[in-house]
Amino acid sequence: MKKGLSILFLFLIIIACSTTSQQIASAADSPKKGSDTVRIANDSLEYEVIIIDNGFNNWLASRALPRNYHSLAFLENKNYLYVTEWNNRVLQPQRYNPSLYEMTIDYRPNIHYGYEVNYLIYNYMIYFQNTYKQKLWGNVPSR
Image 1: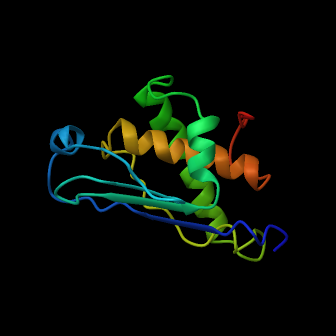
Image 2 (image 1 turned 135 degrees about the vertical axis):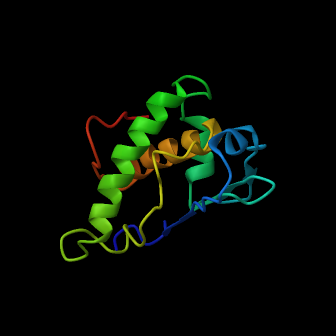
């Protein structure tokens, strides 16, 4: 792969428990950032998001729009569209680079993940599309 220095490894696990959407929404969603890792988990581990990609943290801090710029409904709608196309590409390794689309993302629109989870997924999708010159859906903001 030409972008050998930047290894994409997106690992996203969203585990829905038998709790209600209100309990998930009220859980503390605070990202924990490492050098090239963004991790979000709530206290009872009803879901977990781990994003590992060289450069994403710097991009998020310097180029992403601030939190609360977009509404939660906007982020949820965009994430559903992006993740649906992402998962379609994972299932077509002959057509799309399997080094970019390694695994499916379990994102369910009927579960309320909260603003922070949706914010980070949305911004990762924008970062991914701009960095790897991909177009998952619609107009991609160039930040």
